[in-house]
Length: 401
Ligand SMILES: Cc1ncc(COP(=O)(O)O)c(C=O)c1O
Image 1 (tube, rainbow, N blue to C red):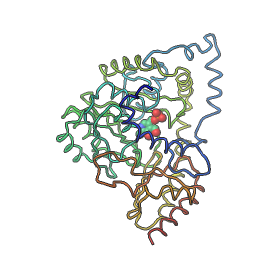
Image 2 (cartoon, rainbow, N blue to C red):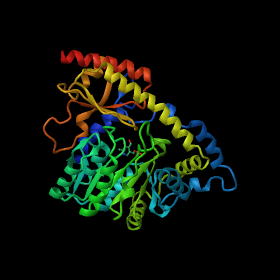
Image 3 (tube, protein in one colour):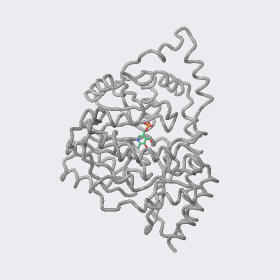
Image 4 (cartoon, helix red, strand yellow):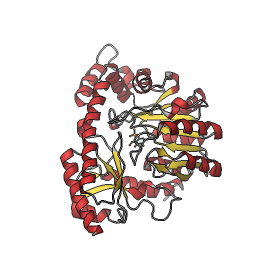
């Protein structure tokens, strides 16, 4: 039997954690606060059905949607990124700098292909998005955690770590961070772009949640403050349209995007043209603005229900974030081992959550994050959130008694 390549070993632990998270998406009797998917009610089924009819009718019978596409993606979808996702948030871009990718995760792979040699240091928020850290480890990067507070990545700690470790890249989810829900402040966004330039480090600004805001003002992209080309922005259609369409994008400089185009060609030729054609039409027909408003309304009341239930039913010592958008609240119950108790809670209460410690990377103090949880509210109704957080809170209070 041929031996597997070494990189699979680096992935095994993270893949196990990811399987655990994704199996919590699969349903069954468990009530899952561990998921990270849109609500079933959030998919624009009727509109997609109409659009499909349009895409495959007319003289060309949807030729663009079924043949191989260019490596950069359909112009119509790149224009939608420029006009509907970037310009309204204050970022002017040319479509020659926008590439459509297979979801918002593919950009992480592509940045590693372009920049990362084995042993290179990548600075990541602590805690950080598991998919990202899994990919970085697969490329044999060395991950160094940077402190995070309620304003996002701590810029003093970041600069200290840049000086100490000479990283190749900084990975950040600046808006409604996965897993904590916190958002990088305006001042820190500016500072991050400055530091990237000053120390010549690449920043991957991974921003798939930014559109889904329930309170507060939209903040500029870190990329808006980038003068050196060191900041590369990636986004995704998964949370605002459909994750099954596997669509995302990268915005980068001329030189970088040319390299990404080569990488795309050598990796998977082009992104799914059928999904691109349908998504492009969704934006062209002007459906997006209303859909986004609907999504924000749907999730806002779920977020509010979660925050209210945490305050009402969890032990008084519980600390939690108050996200202005996105999908997640991060909660910590000091004195309890939420990692160790996850199985007992699933067996006894039929409830699961994102196990906080799995979002931490090496280099953290022993036991880091064991009293934390990532709680997803997007996929559960207000009633289910209230009822199950009440049960969980009661259980935790007994444990502390
Ligand atoms: C931090 C982060 N980045 C990127 C993505 C993009 O995922 P996808 O490849 O499904 O578009 C997600 C989705 O969960 C995410 O949470």
